[in-house]
Image 1 (cartoon, rainbow over the protein chains, first blue to last red):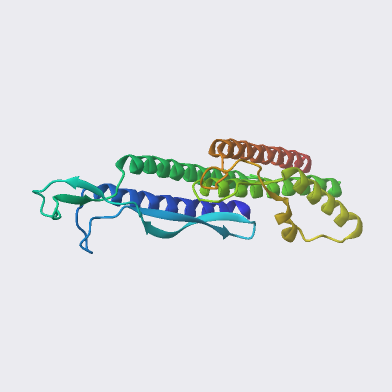
Image 2 (tube, rainbow over the protein chains, first blue to last red):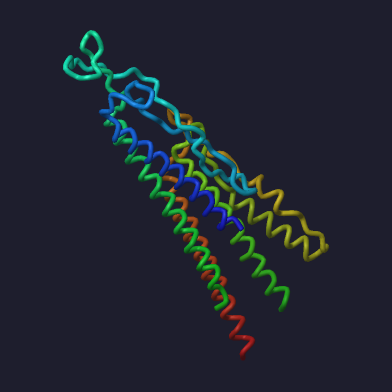
Length: 134
Length: 126
């Protein structure tokens, strides 16, 4: 039954979008973290989404295939009094672009809502079908 | 009389099957709204229902039924949308609209089936 498969598809979409939202939260929280477990400033993370077949009907769900580090360079900030400043007085600040993260956050939450709506629609249709003949 | 009954119900069955498959494909597009290189798909409702009705007709006359489950994939086609920079061709506004429209069609078939069943019950009860 294709309608039941919609729950799997939308469910996968919801978990992928919440993983994306999770990464955005981590990036925003660490926008000022000048050091981390490896001793360097925090690197922004991005999720990679991948389409995976769900069910037999060539319909696709989503999966987070991996979480990758943003390769863009650190923002160098001149602040000689900072404890993590280098010999020239520059501090490596995380390469988190706050504006980009906010856009990402809105996009992820809208996509999540779309999946919720799809799932609700499938539920309504199933209930209508079950009420047939009553 | 009974064959007429069967005719009606096989039409409803084929419609439910095709509409729910289309709903599934549209949901898959919405779930993959932000997946790079994903190409939006659609389900050819017209061909699916025509073939389903044809095969139920053939079943009645010859008793030979075709396997529908294997052929349902052939009704799925890629939309000719322009892809964005990330290679994704899902247009979310279009998908939402088609999803709502398809759900409404499904509900109207449910209503029609309900009316049919009610009429039959009325006849049976006299």
